[in-house]
Image 1 (cartoon, rainbow, N blue to C red):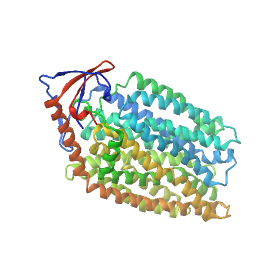
Image 2: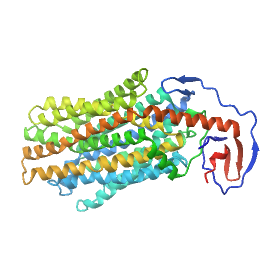
Image 3: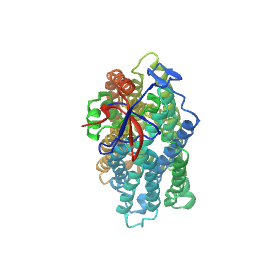
Image 4: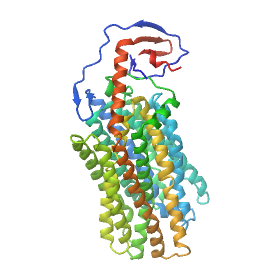
Length: 510
């Protein structure tokens, strides 16, 4: 792997078939960094105003994605009634499972594209597809449940195009603690969007007396998002923040996959992320219904559980993401393994809070909401740190691929399975019981599985803390070697179909 510098900002793949003209470079000097982040031992260059504006746009689009995703959970009972599956939690869970399947199987595809082709174009096309599928899902007739499920799977494809790639743009605009802060801001969209999905999704459905209208607002905002991407965001060179705008040549996809399998920190954090996805995916779909059953059992039918859960999720997200990020930054001064240890702490500590909430929800509702809040805060400690760890241990041109494969694992073994499994286990425990209490009890027992997976995830992050220092240093050494090799052996390659770029002999993979 070697470094290369594009005359234009857009990094392009090298083609062995393109005719080239070579001439040596004189006085090639690497740019002086304006600052240095001693916590991560990498230089910092001034990202500029456009970088911050771009991050705000990416945050707003991520927010929109999560609003749409959790609109379904907010209106799940109404959707079950519309399609005649009110007493079938297994089929209801399948709506979210198929969405995640579409999301996960295409994440590696978009990861491959994100490391090799213009990311703004790929994201824009995906968002337009997502908007079209979301809107079309609101017009599916009552007797065509399976068509609705299929369309939700296609919505997941559109979301994957954005989620897989967008975070790597932030990684190329910022570095060190500043990148951690921008990732914290970006991932505020997860709890806020989730909470707004419950609140706005339920509110719009009640205002129009039809849950379908909740799916007809976000597509228009999706089109506006595409315009912002195309006309405001200027795509950075891959690795720009770390290499001083020196592009790095992409490798073959198989080589990327082999490198990921050899990176222990990446593997452990991927397994930890998968555990988080299992827990959050199950709770996001079924916890609202669990509390609605509790409220119905107690005769509190005028209280909107979706609004309460949305508010709890928003508050937990703000506090969790902020505490996790700030805490990790502070702890880095004393322990270079801080990020992985904070993730482990969050997963393990969430388990007892979730257990208490599920156990006492039927008799102590106030206590249940309080400990659910604390449990979600602990889970959200990890949200910005997991992708930050990925960027610390993977070279820039491998990050979209790494993110895509991490999403595939997290969803294939995590939240693609958990909604359906939890619903099926609840159906099995309940048997023929149809009272509010029997339905609550069976669902609560099935949700205890989330407590177990939360602890397992903490164990994987503890394992990652043992390897993160070595993998981080290996990545930084690779970047330094690339820049040194470019300075010593670089030649300009001029192609009639590509902008002129500086490459080295190691860029040509045979």
